[in-house]
Image (cartoon, rainbow, N blue to C red; front, side, top):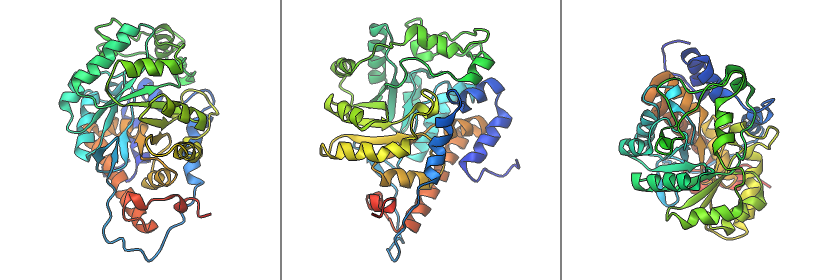
Length: 364
């Protein structure tokens, strides 16, 4: 790899592989079991053709949109991903500053290596908080209160991890957090340690010991009762579950299979997105749809919007860029996506995101 800036998101992964310790790189890169879903998330985008329009005035393009009513400069948000300090000493602080530079939102993981208060203090754009529900409901309540008081503007409840998917690279590496690193948001509750267990994933043990596998739809009602923040439900791949989330008051859903890290052979998210969008459209307006998993090009973003997403969330490429070049790398990844989205919109005859409609991917 030369010293010239990467031309695309995949080249950042190559840089990260050269830069990061093996345990951390494998943690970010790996998927569950045979990694079928991990690879299909990305491959599925390549199977979708864009049926572009011609003779449309695209002299001016505008990729800006809103998410939950908040303006963002492009339909790309930073996905919730754990342990950013494995990639860079500044961790989530560098990531949130880059998101602000790009004019978009960051979704902060419960498993952040930086406290939510510090991340929000460093932010110049919206910060949402991704929530895992702990067996200790008072600890969960405390997390929600801290997120509110820090200035987070939405909660994103992850629902596809009652147990942790088996990620064989983490087992092989006995994945753990290095000395001086912890689950920063759980320090007050004494749940911040992720220890090494020979021949086992420390994260899998943490999840089994502390997170609540009995989570039910009624718990979404409980969560809504303890916060005034809008709630999004992350981990949806079925239309009926999307509708159920809306019926329980969710402001949005994230079509997600956890980046191929939970149930292997779960469907690629872009393939289920149109069915989820159609099911929610049948209920009328009101529930926003986001999608993650496999987005590597601006054309992928346009395809997701055409199928009904409001915006996409990008995870691994942000981590690759953080490892390779810190805050500037993350800002560059978002700039690459912005340029690719703009070019794809121009070539598709879609000068605004409102013009990115289903006929671009489904002309029938």
